[in-house]
Length: 207
Image 1 (tube, one colour):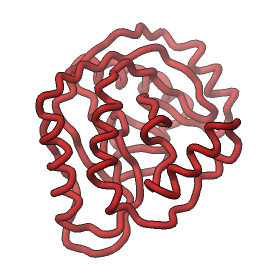
Image 2: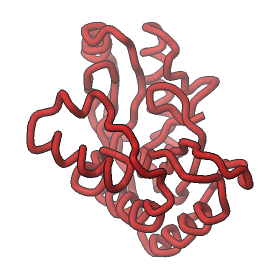
Image 3: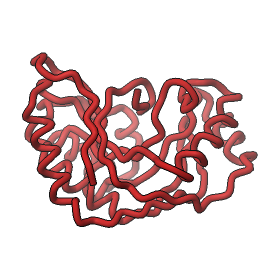
Image 4: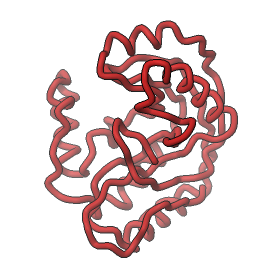
């Protein structure tokens, strides 16, 4: 794997960035096609002009825009250099206000663990627990709260679930209906050779 960092370094101020696997090849094309259909609802997630289709490995607020983050990420990527990471897109599903594609890729969990272990010390402390976490059943709720307090993210280690967010709407029933009507065939694959870092927008998007 190689590291692609799209950060403006040197300004020491808290910032949010998403460490992710950008979709490539046939998988990117499949995600673009699904997103194009879902944009009939709205363009809150727009792979055509604004956003990058991706699998998040670690999304958090960082303490500072510094060389330390890129250096730590390089260290994690070196550990992953021998990994052969083949990613397969699975079924589309509705998750509340989000439309998502399931992902089959055990290597994504390996990559996420490596990135979090290498960089979490650089995450901003005392981050707020997202409101949606409190609505979850136990034991997931308590585990995610603990992960936010320790790692600055509710979706790491045992709580990591690889997926691609392809649509969003405030009306959950509209999302469920749109996903149910999708003409989408799962199975597109790509080899994840790149770990990227990008600025974030609304609804988990990467700019």
